[in-house]
Image 1 (tube, rainbow, N blue to C red):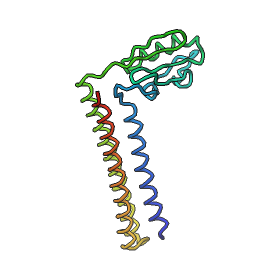
Image 2: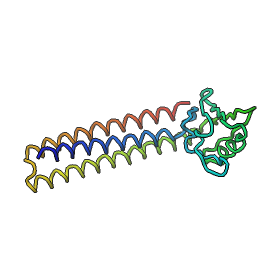
Image 3: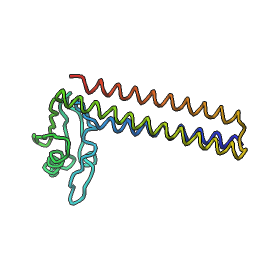
Image 4: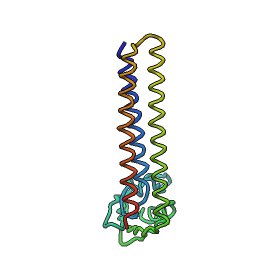
Length: 188
């Protein structure tokens, strides 16, 4: 009887946590002007006829706040890696210097910072909607169980309160992530 209530609550919490994880990944892809190896995460390199993720053919690290260094595992692939970075939609211009590819990050303009900040807020709002949808689905499952007399009204109320606490906690996390990202973007 209470197993279904527990499983509904657990499912809600798991799905909300996944939404927040997805937001973290999405926010991590937004460029802030500071060098971070994750910026090149989605770059695919033509590696002997196959498209391979950059991190599988080279070591990517941050040399300083404005420069990434890419060290190919196979020195013969330096040109292909450089080309892949240049052709990515990141607007970066890599330079090869003796086996190491340096990728300087241009400073962001104020207008671009505001655009990125808006984008971060929009991602946050989408995540909040997803979390609220999980809450709605969970509450609907609880109501269905109540109608079928699988749970009592007290169980239903307690479970709804628990789901609401999950919702509040995860929405608070989303707000904090977006606020932190906005601060990061707007720093000069």
